[in-house]
Image (cartoon, rainbow, N blue to C red):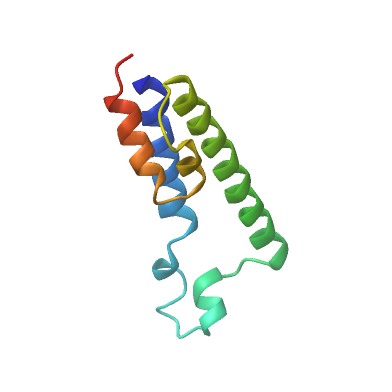
Length: 97
């Protein structure tokens, strides 16, 4: 069971740090607010990044919900809410196999 939970945490942390870090892009050069957040990305690239993040979230949430159902955990819908996923992950790790 822990083999599924650990990669989910690493993937979520990677996406949060790499894709959503607004502080490391363009703030030194006095860029405008939109340039500061998105850097030199075009709208097409931003759209693809957004779609990638959304697809990844849906896939991970579906996997977590399936794991929770197989463990007979309550409130499997928590898998779809980003912050509340942690509650379900903790319950899954603590559940007897």
